[in-house]
Amino acid sequence: METEIKVKQVLATVLNLGDRVARFDAGTPLLGAVPELDSMAVVSLLTALEEKFGFTIEDDEVDGRTFASVGNLVAFVQSKLAA
Image (tube, rainbow, N blue to C red):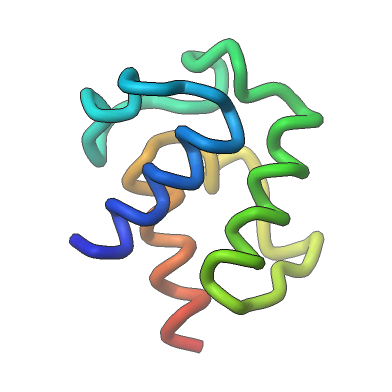
């Protein structure tokens, strides 16, 4: 749960979502549903996640499924933390 909270904080900061992120849950769609999440924002979001959690993300580790939903993004971060 703590990871989800931190991921949502990063989303709120990078995408300037403000209080909207408080309504997000694991099933909330991201890519294609959140207008602020465009290709440039994806790069900024990945960088912010690396800085927040202290891991490195390789280009071949991410695809559209990573950003399909909040839950997918949290699962990705958890998998990186477990590695």
